[in-house]
Length: 585
Picture (cartoon, rainbow, N blue to C red):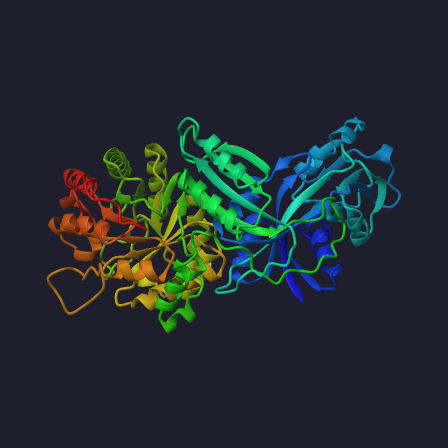
């Protein structure tokens, strides 16, 4: 039995396409409907479904950019493309007539695809629905003969509806191009079998004259046909563009691999999504080609580095396979709105330990941004050793932090302490922080793993690196790939500092995991004057950024006053960091 996830419910085009694809091959399939395309990706990463179906193109509506973006963000491997003919029918209750219809429900893109037909029904209103399956189900359950749905013919059978009109798409050859995707598996290689292959990638050409032309020339010289090239604004990068490209080649082919590597060198951003089997040239309602057993092409730049990384992993890596470096040899870059955490960059998150007042957090946000911080940290719920210490402002503090983030333009980071807080916090802040005391709160880890919000996971007070990575695995295994690790000091016999900042953890983690790593020198030593050299050291050993506490008047801080930096202290640290080169990836 094959399990495959799709967006929608039974009777939707995606559901019917999956069933037809697998059943035509002689495989039994259990389809799993989820509300969003992101949840399709999460279901595959978490192992709740072996495969997922993501749309990437429609003959009328154009590119589904979310499909490409999710393959890249979740590191999914495309297995093959499926071309599905969008056979749209107008469905109603038994006894309904076309002339009586006053309301037509369908997915917004389907409504767009059937615009000419809908224009002939002047008395009927077009109403967007979540998907075609939901539209058909709602008509069946509503019992109103003046309401109809646009859905595939299989939905009529599933929900007891009748056809009021057929062939209603603007163009008869309307089709959607899907990618069937799966999660990567260590060490499983692709075996060529002669099936035509296609390679998809995202890239941003350098913002200089002729850069795109040079890239296209490389493909031409390698005799690689571009079957698709489309651009859109690059998120967070004004006047720069990200290109979606489909190449008629296999990335394993030596000539193609060399061309792709040369293209990578010319790009400001490059993401190889993978190679996969090309579908039949005609949109189909059934596919009978034998299923590939491969796991898709690997990034050619990963090459020789992967076996060494796998060999260096401890035996305990079996407890954190999704966090282990070989599962994503080129490393993870977590996108927090316009900020990239990971890769070749170095970022600084700064702000007060606790949100204490509106003026305090807004002034701090503006001051740290002016000095180069790109993330705003601030605690609203504060776990404290003493029950009599300041515990934070709670939800009021969350609202003030969000306001400060809006005013300053900085994405926000704040700690979530319990499962019941997760959903609301995920709507309010840009990064959910799991504090050191909660690193092994497994229910909380699972809860943030079910969100689509990036997670900052701090190392526990006495946690080993294996335990930190196992905690990250809890989040990854639930389907959230956006995890950032944080070394914040551990408890040892030494009492000169608040904790012992374990900077040796950074190079070890960079070998063992693909996840980005921040260092929190504020909690690492707990003494203001020692934070500055440790911030420099964090960059020198290869951290992807630091997290520091800054306060307008540290002597009046309600928590961690001894380690809070003044604005002048923070400016000195930012000046220092500008003189230190970024540790090579």
